Image (tube, rainbow, N blue to C red; front, side, top):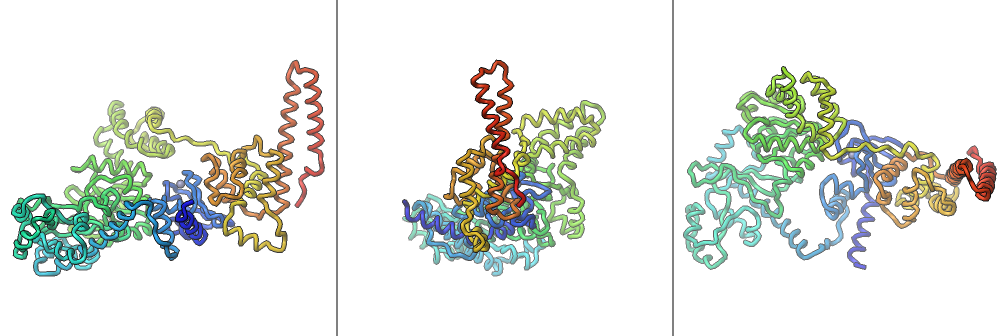
Length: 638
Ligand SMILES: [Zn+2]
């Protein structure tokens, strides 16, 4: 066996034992005590209004009875942070203040990549400081003027670490070259180079007085000199949600046609993937959690203005359409969002895709439509923050907004235009994952458009079938007897981790020998008492696992069984004793015997039964009846 694997497994287990899943989950979900050992809250993985997400304090797992997500503390972190397992281990270690064992990478490529990412973050720290410094210097005068013109005060400029990239293509390079090698700088996304002669390079790099031609000459045998991609631009750092600068957007201050695009973004690098980043999330995430909604705007300037006006829960999509990853990222903090860009404007298709994605991720969306010609930045500067606050309060539910728009597009008078309006709305409704919500929307639309509800429902029903079916599963929980619950708890106790140590030591001296798992295993296996029960497959899975498994929730074979196990464990109140386990076994015996008796009686009613068989069945019937009368099977008052 691989020794590194074993030691990291040990570390993982140690970490898991030290972590309190209730506290860890509590960082993301507001939990309330719901029972002796469980807590509940709103599921972070699907949208819901009543809490169906439960965390078991002693058994250290979570389960959502709404969407079926479940697992241990690592699974939770992985899912909620959208990261890999090793990253989840690292993050948990960080949260607990436990030092990580020496990192072992699975391949040299992985190690190289990790080092590259660390080094690129350092490059961006230095570059950010460099741009900030340039903004303060005399050559930053135009940039300062521009920012003042946009209404940004020093505090905001400092908060967003806004800087200035000087006109020279070489200053940043020279500053960074003292600390980092050129190979790394080429990977940073901050530099360009031309695989051509140095004369062309100099023309392209907009040379200024501090260019040193002799240096260029000296390096002409090198792979091609690098120069800054961002020149004469106001620099807005783009941060990951931890607040680390990973890229920049540069707003040009040049007016000549050589200046390139108005806004220039860093290309994708080892640390920057634009589909995974939301502008300002690092500053906004606390406020989003506290206020329980976010404000989504389109541009970075809009975002900065709204933030500076005191609305700290604002983030920007940076002009491009939302990606699923961004939606999931945002959803970690709140599933309520006010979208403040006009879905009818130029980027209408990108906007529609953004909204569609948010619908699919089960966000509750409101639309804030400002007067024509106003973006959030302009609106706040002209009308003030109170007006913006009022506009926020008056934002409209997304589907109300859509219905209004459909009404305007197809003034509802005759049935033909009503059908058109419905057809216009249908694709939007189809995106909603919840069938119940789709149903509600159908009702609302039929009322608002004045359409006979039955007709619309017919349309929606058809629409729903073209969508991947969301089945409502019949629940097995209701059919499981108390005895089955006790035995499942007993079987599950075989895998209980450190918490069980505490519990049994508390019982020490009363009956040390009691092992509920062994008692249940013995009884169930020797008599096959679980046959034909609702919980049969779950019991079998637990019996097969024996005592070797640490991750209890990984055992059930089906979604339904996982749900059943979670519900039983979440609701365990009284402690298991030899008497309760024995009582449960007796109850299963009774159930078993009664079922056999019924089967026997049914068999006896079969016409044309051969005499021999009839005799055998009658004997069996007598035996079962006797067995059922055995005083050992009586329910004892405990
Ligand atoms: Zn859920």
